[in-house]
Image (tube, rainbow, N blue to C red; front, side):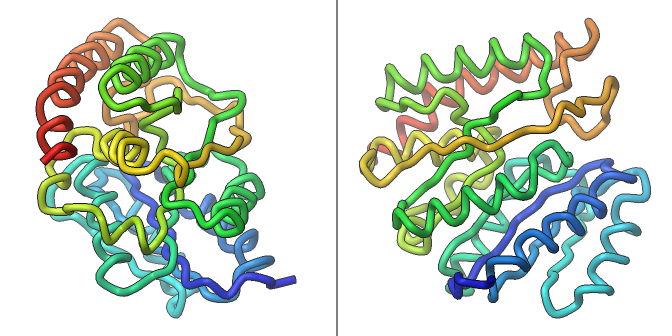
Length: 256
């Protein structure tokens, strides 16, 4: 039964998710259709080198009234891609923007429950807490280090601060300086820090069930999946630059 009339924009970035991305969209479309009467998908193909865009285009043709499909001409990365979706939601007066990573890792029913939770609580920002997170240990360790850094700097109590499963309200989108955050490497972590620093009482965390479907050697992981030495080194390099970003740019943007 469709009990929710709020205007929702569902932002999903993709990079080399052929065979997964469009199927995940179909699952999400069916699940959201059970509860929400006014939603639109904002799909971003970040210059994939496989058939991701072709498959997403087929989905968008099937659901033309509910889909906006964007193809980046160059690989911009996860951060700029999702911020473009947030900015579109803000500019077009959506009540809520839902961001979901396009890797088919989260259960659609659990995501829908997160959105209902966010609406019922009237939160600025709602973060998904990944249950059964299907990631390598090294990624979880880096997430923990980021959490400690953000806790000390900005009082963040969300352990999964950069999670790509979240809901942002219209009121909160009005507070964000998109031009300043769109070039950040980890804008989702910045948004988490900003929300806790601004008003932690309006920031919520709720469980989201994950599928145990990690795939070794996935090309869609911007920072590497941590399954081999090369990937681990890539992760550590990315983590170093993110540490610098948190302790310089985050502080400057949030406190000015």
